[in-house]
Length: 116
Length: 360
Length: 155
Image 1 (cartoon, rainbow over the protein chains, first blue to last red):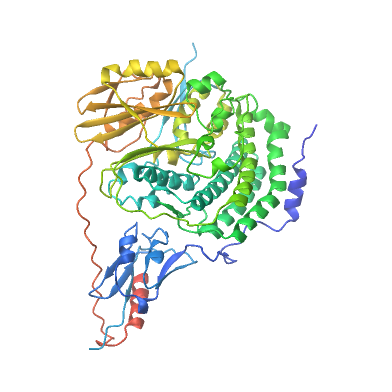
Image 2: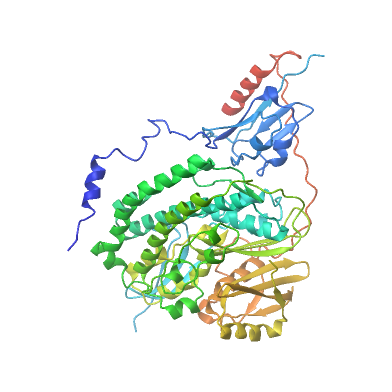
C-alpha cells in the first residue's frame, strides 16, 4: 500500500528555503518591466494630451493652457498605454506600486512658467 | 415521510474561489435538488461596452476574470478583428498562443490546489500553488503583470518576446516538469485522494451530451471536443496535439484530464517556441467595426464564445461573452441531485467554477 | 469567414430547434441584444465544429417560448434573459424556473432600456493650480509642485 509517499516532498520542504518572501520585512523583488505606477518627467512634457486620450480609465487630466498634468493613481489601471503613446517619452512606468493611502488623492505636476 | 431542509451553500465558503449561492434541498444527508443563484460579482461589463471606446475596452475585457484573464482579452480581440476583417501577423498569433498556454498551465495548477484544499489536503494545495508562482514570475518578466497582462491589443500584441526569453521559458518549464510529476502523481495515486474523488459526481456520456457540457467536464465523460483543433487565429494549426479524454466521468477522471492537459501545454509551448516566425507583432487598425462576429476559443475551463456587434461608431452595440462555466452549471445542478452532503464542495470545485466569468 | 444567421419567426422556433436536436446539434448559447423596437435573439448550435445560428426578433411587448423541453440546459440562458432584459420567456421547465431569482440584482431588468446614442466626449478640465504664496510668478515651480504633492497626499 503506497500511503505516505508524499512524505518525501514534505520532509524536503522542511529543509528547503521558504518559497515566500517575508514582506514587508524583506523588500519585494520586482522585474524590470513590472507595471507599478506612472511617473512623469514634467520638464519634457509638451501638454499635448495624447496620454489623456489614450487612458482607458480617464485617470489623466492635462491642461494645456495652465500647463498642468494631473493623474489619479487610484483610478489608473497600470496598462502602460500613456507611456507607449507619449511623443516626448516623458512618461515612464515605475516598478513600485502606488502606496496605500487613506484618501484617493490626485497628483498634480506644474511645468516651468516661461519667462516673458 | 421525512421533511426536507434547505441549507444554503455559499456565497462565502472555504472551497469557493468566487461567490455563488446554491440552495440545497436536503433530506437526511442526501441532496434532493440544487437551486443556483448568482449575481454577487455582477459588474455589468457587457453594458459598459456602450460607453467605452472599442479599442480601450480590451482592458475591461481582460479584467472579467483573474484566472482566465488572457483568454478574455484574446477572445475579445479576435471577435473585433473578425468583425473588422483584420489579419493578425503570424508572429503575434504564436506569441498569443504561448501566453495562452502558459495561462492554461497556471489555471490548472490553481484548480489542482483548490481541489486539494476542498479535500482538506492543505500541503498539496500549497505545493501546487508554489509551482504556480514560477509561472506567474514568467508572466511578470514578459508582460509586466502577474495576473492582468495588458499585452493583447486589437490587431496583435503590444510586447515582443526575444528568442532568449522564449528559450529560458522552455528551460524553466522543463525543470518544473519533474516536480510537477511528483505533485500530480499525488492526485492520481494516493489512496485517500482516490477514495474521495473516485465515483463521485458521475456524468455519463449521454448526460454530458444532453446537458451540453464543455471543456474538461465533457472530455472526462468521453465527449471529444476541443476548440483548439479548429482554431485558425492561434498557432494551433501548426502544432500537433491530441485532445485529452477520459471515460469514467467522475471527479477523478476530470482531474486526470486536467493533469494531462497541463503536461500537454508544456509540450505545446515547446513546439511553438521552435516554430515561432519573425516579423511584425501588430497590424494597423483603422476605422470602426460595422458588422457582427462570433468567435470561439478554448479557455482552460472549456469553450468560450465571444460575440460583438458593431454599428459604425467607436462604441459597440453588443458584446456577449458566454463562458464555459456558464455552460457547465446545468451539469452541476444535475450532478448535485442525489449526491451526499459531504461531496457537495468536491462537486462544486470539480466543474472548475469561475463565477466572475459567468456573471461578468 | 462568412457567418450565417438563419432568420426565423417566433411560432417556428420550437420546430427549428427540434430539427437541430434530432440532427444531433449541441446548444451553444442564446444571446439577447436590445434593438430599438424589441429584442434580437440568436440561438447558436454546434455539431462537429460546424457553427450555425438561428435569429429571432421579438417585439418589446412580445413573449418567446422556452426551449427547455428540448434542451434542458437552456434554462441558464433563459433565466438570465428574463432577469437582465425583462424578456417574457414562457413555459420554462418547472424544476428550473427560478422566476426572477437567478440573478440577484438591486433593480429589475437593468438592461431593459435600449442604449442611448452616446454623447460626444467632453474633455475633462484639469484643476486650476492653486495660488501659491511662496513662489513669485516666473520662478521655476518644481519645488512647489513637490510641496503641493506632499500636501495633497497628506491632506
